[in-house]
Amino acid sequence: MKVLLTGANGQVGRCTQDVYAGSDHELKALGRDALDISDAAAVAQTVKAFCPDVIINAAAYTAVDKAESEPELAYAINVAGPANLADAAAEVNALLIHISTDYVFDGTAHTPYSEGDETNPQGVYGQTKLDGEREVQRRCNRHIILRTAWVFSEYGNNFVKTMLRLGKERNELGVVADQVGCPTYAGDIATACLAIARRVVDGNECYGTYHYAGDLAVSWHAFACAIFEEANNSGLISAKPAVNAITTADYPTPAARPAYSVMTGEKLANDFGVPACDWRNALRGVLGKLA
Ligand code: NDP
Image (tube, rainbow, N blue to C red):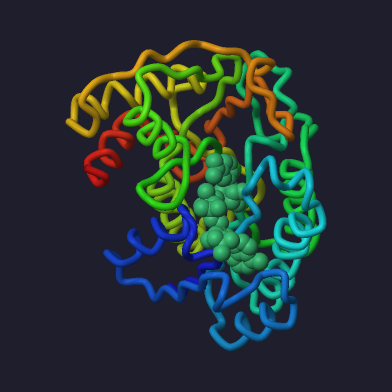
């Protein structure tokens, strides 16, 4: 299987490279400097030349707050980028696996979101990701849109690394307790993408939008407590800081975030046999790698 990966230096991109390193598939991993997905001509030319069976788009504008003041750039990367990839994938009949987000929802639900539930993004980032999904749906029949959430890994910047830094610097910190979601390890997303790609290439012709995230919903506050618990157990921090529960109103940010963005992964489990991931176990693994 020939796989073209975009955004190869991000969290999901790096983990995808790790996952494919142990497989017999041919992976062409391109970071932003090798392929800017907002450049339509470059995308078309690269895809035509490599002629992949599968394209995994892990490239995105992911700065949720900064997107509020850079909407054009967020649009170019999160909407025009996937549109370019979808056109190029359709041209060579490749499967396009495009990663999207729980932030397409407004968070007013009280039970886990299904794929068909109404979307209503609360900020520029979520809106551009939703518009990107629509471009993919419109332009490329053979697509999988994989919505995920609260991504962490040993790579790049993420909540786990921020908490570890703050845990070393402070004895006490406040973390938002009224936003609930599902932490997800980037390595598990990469493994899920590989499993989906294999199944589709082997003839499981299921396409469309799917949810994939951690199996246990928590608040950022509970996630922080779990991080400190595991980090203390593994010796990464010498003492657990006090973690005070604060509200979203106590911690204003430029972009509004959904209060509840739990997603059910039943459809992916049914169609592809890929269950929701165990983020607590993955967290231990990431902390082990960081130790
Ligand atoms: P990262 O921010 O870690 O990685 C994104 C990568 O995309 C970066 O390496 C970035 O490069 C690259 N990139 C940005 N612009 C372009 C461009 N024009 N062309 C090519 N590459 C570009 O993101 P994650 O790995 O965390 O996210 C992967 C996917 O998961 C994204 O689709 C994101 O929307 C989604 N997601 C992420 C969540 C999270 O919590 N992080 C939550 C839910 C969904 P550079 O560093 O040079 O800018």
